[in-house]
Image (cartoon, rainbow, N blue to C red):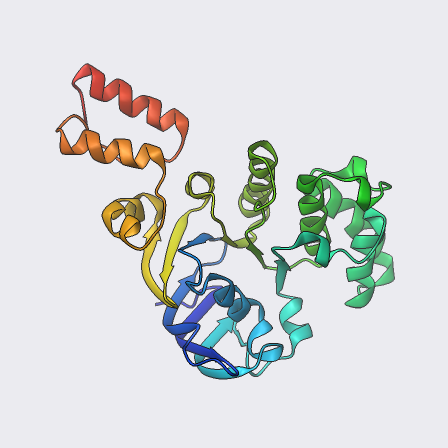
Length: 287
């Protein structure tokens, strides 16, 4: 099997002072240009898995580390945090804690200067990153004046200016309303489709995640219990509900229609597909 952009092999990790593993025997591969959503109940190890990808463990959080995490061909244990940061950009759960400047363009400039970007490239990188995130008009704005969704886009732009191959986000829409949440995911999809960026995102809004991600990884108790294409994972609705994952309502409806013999097609991943499913069931052409 060809190596992926992210290859995690038999990885277990226990934080210093803890009596139990945060990650247990995780094996996971994400191809270049993949879009992986990570779901699971609280305490499942979702954030810790993102730390394994971006190198926060073992470089910042110490503990017992077993197995391998190979990112874009380099082992996270044997590489430096700066080397990893040039490959993996991270957007934190608490977006305000990630901001270091008071003006949008200075936020993007900070990362470029900190990572030693060539001075002749800085202006183009700032301009391109703002355009990619769809926020060129915010360049001179005070960060304090921005909405939550706009701040998330600034954080994404600051990461994109560093030209990473992977972007990892931990619950980026946790404090956002539905409209702002969707705009953030639309930005991520554009980065993934148009620029080939590999995206890994932890998200609680399962319907939103199912619409935009290509694959889902389901975690429970530090273990990876399900992983695959979105529609395939949603087929295991009973298992998901058993571990405390709220499945999308349209997946619940699809299951009920299947049980009644009214529908035999794929599980819908958005409202348009759900409407097609209902029309098919109502007309008697369930397949």
